[in-house]
Amino acid sequence: MSNADDRSTARQALIVIGLVLATLVGLALVWETRRVLIWVVVAAFFAVALNPLVDRVQRRFVRRRAAATLLVFLAAFVAFAALGVLIVVPLVNELARFADRAPDLLREAQAGRGPVGELLERFHLRRHAEAHVDQIQRFGGQLGRSTVGLVRGTVQGVAGVLTVVVLAYLMAVQGPRITAGTLALAGDARAERLRRIGRESARTITGYLSGNLLISLICGLLTFVVLALTGVPFAAAIALLVAIADLIPLVGATLGAIIAGGAGFLHSPTAGVVVLVFFVLYQQVENHLLQPLIMSHAVQLNPLTVLVSVLIAAEVGGLVGAVLAIPAAGIARILLREFVPAVRRAGSVPAEQPPAGERPG
Image (cartoon, rainbow, N blue to C red; front, side, top):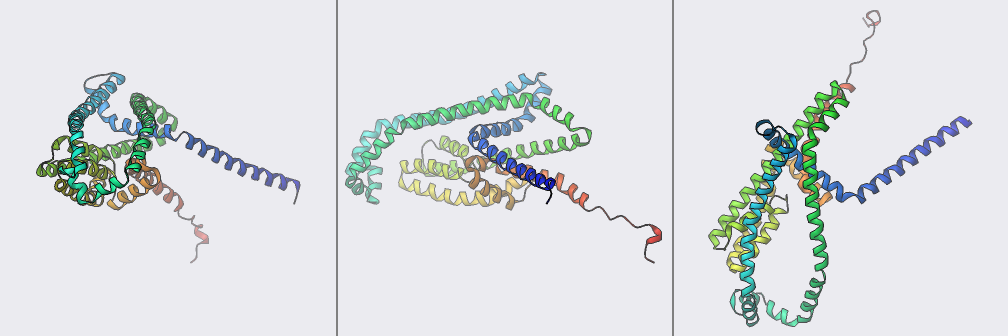
């Protein structure tokens, strides 16, 4: 082997080693900045979803893009604040009433009387609690020491929400300028395709949000009916809270079952059992019927693709992956439809025909 071949082999080995190292550094950088990247992805998701409304406000009411975006974001904030007031005020009143009744409930539970005491006696939990008083006290001390971590997590969550709102606002304001610059760099030949991909991707995200809101509305209405029939107080506020929790794919109905089931058991054991049975049945219907059918119509995906994409994304990316799984699958379908047929056409070019004189007889 000549020296030139040795140098070429060494150069190729160095290139491969450099690419591997660059990939590892890139993955490590992504892992270290994963929280910021998640914030950026969620902000882009909301910016794209609100962009049609911003465009409509800009065309009809306000000419300046920043002012139209600010109006839309203020309207969204007022809507969320109103929902928060509808949920928080009844819950605070209920907690205050529960705090006033807590000493009496505790005495009744210790004596085996009242709804809580009867429940403890029925499941033989009072004797177990009396036999493990020291462990319960140690567990309470551990909960008290974990308050600092809870406060830190709450502060980080509030900072994340504010960051997502600011990023989404800036993306919505600068979206047309960034899009125009990208299309100008792409050239006329690719600009139309990129514009079509962006338009259909935005339609997919909007369809996903509308479908998810429809599913949550169905869950909230059915929960209100069940709670009202069982006589649980504050049925409307609890149903609204369940509907908001149901916006989370797969696990949202479980969170709603915990909220509504707890309220039902506080009212009576029978109401709690009825609410839990309802949510067990409803979660199966939502996960395997409502969500695949509604999302397949809203995002133009078949139900099997919707269900599989949500399951895989929830396993890989957790809560954020489950929320973004369906629009990501819809965008992947758009990209495959745009680029895979072109590759196939390029690979299926007919072979060059031989000259007329060389063709077989």
